Image (cartoon, rainbow, N blue to C red):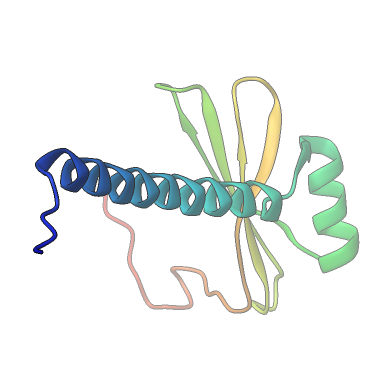
Length: 116
């Protein structure tokens, strides 16, 4: 006696596999997004700036404003070029550390001339 798998059983099996794959992808994406949001340090701008100055000796080097989404990007760095931090302040007043590093130089130090 031969056993024959019906088309509906194959369809259900494929559907279950597809659902498992989609749920796995959703889980991975949500965990990555959760880890990213938890790794970002956010707070009030004045507190963040004070912390950068007192803890790391960093001061503002450059700032840029984005009129489109009303945000401000600021580059902070130590005068000796050893550490840097980029903050973004959003329209709602929330300021977040976006990136950090351990070396930087000014355009003058790099020999870059400014365009007129």
